Image 1 (cartoon, helix red, strand yellow):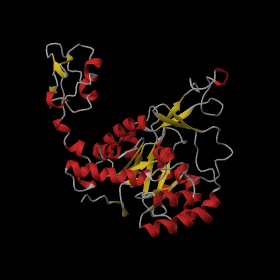
Image 2 (spheres, helix red, strand yellow; image 1 turned 135 degrees about the vertical axis):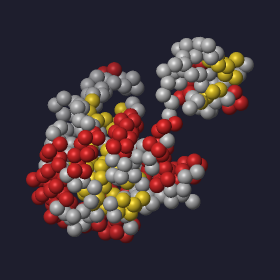
Image 3 (tube, helix red, strand yellow; image 1 turned 45 degrees about the vertical axis):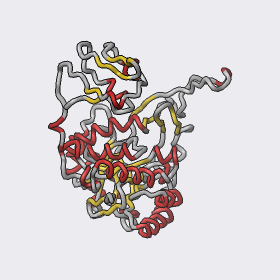
Image 4 (cartoon, one colour; image 1 turned 45 degrees about the horizontal axis):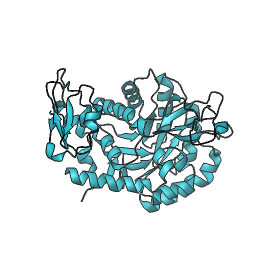
Length: 378
């Protein structure tokens, strides 16, 4: 049986699938639903010194093709409501479930200093969002120092701002006293348009799906995971003993396992919970256990950093190396033939045939094969 428990910074999680700051944890009612849905630990929506409403543009969330956009800010609820109600109720619920409660706070050192006395007695840890304080690491470090006065574990949530070196920021965060890193926040700004062929022409706007003066949004969901994994991988290599909560695009067990393999100690889920409901946490945890069992891993600890440990086995080549072809697995679907720009693979009599003299070694056919009939040799 696979052991899904995870422990770091003195906090023990029943599984590595945590909530991430956002609408699914916007108040204590929804936090309780996430606990019931199987979350291994709770990270609240970001609280600041004033409510984000009425500053949030409308509309501010949308599912777009293959991704998700938002113009979310911090919590739209007054901080006093969190202090007097939601954190108290969340504390009772997490205690009953035996899981940690981490509060997300933002943003500047002055704001953090005002918030700490109000929250420190209800929570087990603090996640700091520094999404809006620029690209100079010094204000971020000041915020960490302010949070550390609580004596609680502090996790810095990194935003993938252009021009920001995530490894440098992670190192600066640890220097300032952070205990761990959450990586990453949503990416942007980006632009998506309202253009549907399923509605009458008079209703097609061709305008941004997001509100606000520019109509820009911030990207999350599946596409973000590949950026998040690269950043987690780099931080984990540079700071191997620092806990990382991997956030961005996790929607199934396989996504989570990949995050763990590149160095995450746990994962945070937000967008998938918006789209599929809070039961997604338990579903992902169950899928993690099934995948680890099939792969022969006994615990989350066994799989963490697996990619880094085996990095020397990767391929580094700049000449054609044809894939291995297992014809007994081929079902003749022709995806490989359809996609090969070198005409190096054909389906003949229901089975793929590889013409190695034409193969450029691009590997596309391997990634497209659904039957495992093609494999790049190490």
